[in-house]
Length: 143
Image 1: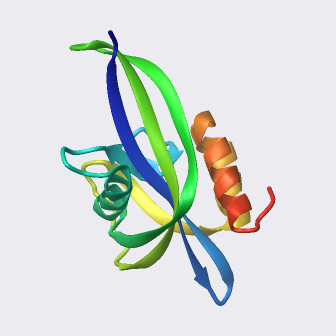
Image 2 (image 1 turned 30 degrees about the vertical axis):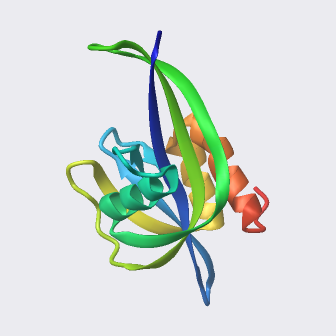
Image 3 (image 1 turned 90 degrees about the vertical axis):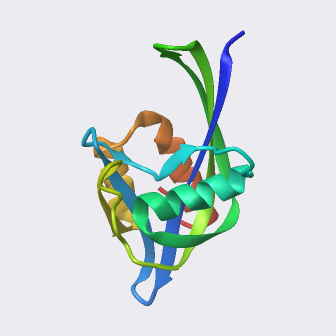
């Protein structure tokens, strides 16, 4: 039987006077992505999402709503087939300092919603398109 692995993360946003800002990370492979990571023992999926966001980007957030779950299978050199589930949440930034976790990612920045969508389209992972689109819709932005 395939192993199961659960990760969680989020689409982090903040509302400023100039409007909505969306957080995107540039991962170590040079791709635009969203903060996420593996669930640790004793954590809820929500706790995992918030911890990973804080670890990878320095931002303290609050979950506003679930966005979606991406499920896929990959081959692990030790365990063989792994069924992976990534739970994404819409997360409002509440504090902290924007600071990339250099071991994991190259940079983290805020973008207006159109720019965020353009960057995702240009250099993001295809399975994140639907996540960002759904999160923007929840925020009232149609792309």
